[in-house]
Image (tube, rainbow, N blue to C red; front, side):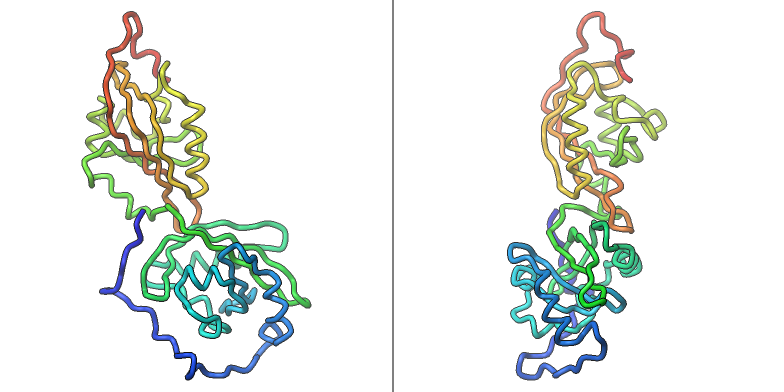
Length: 280
């Protein structure tokens, strides 16, 4: 999914130039020179990573070169000791982002997908992994960032584009939540017949259910998937389709649904003697 520019709605705050950047004094043990220096050891050279203070307002302690490039900052001095609000804008769910950061602990890694902002004000969907560590009894959070294909629920526009689309739960049995008219026309069912039903109702002898399950599993990680499949309409006719699965992130950053899109290639009549009873 392409990133959306919001230059007409909101602009990133103007950052101080290198010459005029204020000299800030450490105000806590977490911001001491010793801890800030040690924080750099948690940065991965080959990843876009950030180390922040483990408590609100989550001040930045160190950033990798790849992170600076990714978010468009030329120098680490512009961001050190600034809060993570620096990356947030109108479409960032700040409440859920803060809940995500506070929920990560020393034992397990947390993963989520959030709308964040580059230094030029461009909104992008980012997959964030977070884990806490201790530096001299000070808790810090190490964040790693990757671009995400995930979209927000309001961006899953089923009525746009003229393709058969359905909003489906990401977890098995992949229940259908919402469809557009094109999807109903392709399947031959009405909304009442498909709403809440498992996706297997469209599968038959020529469907590769294991491959579809694999694609859903990868989509749950925030990666868009494309492939080919055979679906079956209400009369049992086999329809060859290209399929695209796009991850949809809930407010808490977790992938909760999948936007399924179908592009019909061909239709084949149901073999003699096989009825629609094959549909699960």
